[in-house]
Image (tube, rainbow, N blue to C red; front, side, top):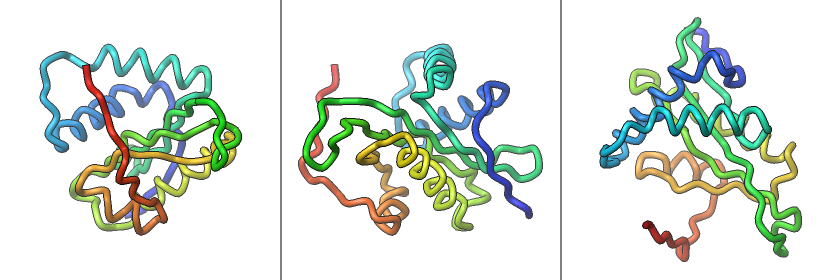
Length: 150
């Protein structure tokens, strides 16, 4: 098994979106709409303007791991004077390839993209499965994170 890594390209979007939906299902999301068109629109627009970046893990030509990061901007604050944040998503590894360091490598590559883009922090809402990966990498839990859904 020779795993290689490269950035997501538009030609990969069908597979990338399928893996994103698999990830959401695995995390217990309630599926009440066809999310594919919305995801395709989002990725195409934000890849084009540089505010979404993704690294892929491949076994030969087969995509077996994904990462994704949206670069967002909010008003600067003391620990993030640029106001730029990386929001991680789409961290997913094919179940038969897990526990081999693939997610850690993808995380390292995408966090480096955040650094290059001038982000002052990287955030993620981790799945139960992902908490260990992120804490081992150096992410800190924020007990005050809250969400209001419509």
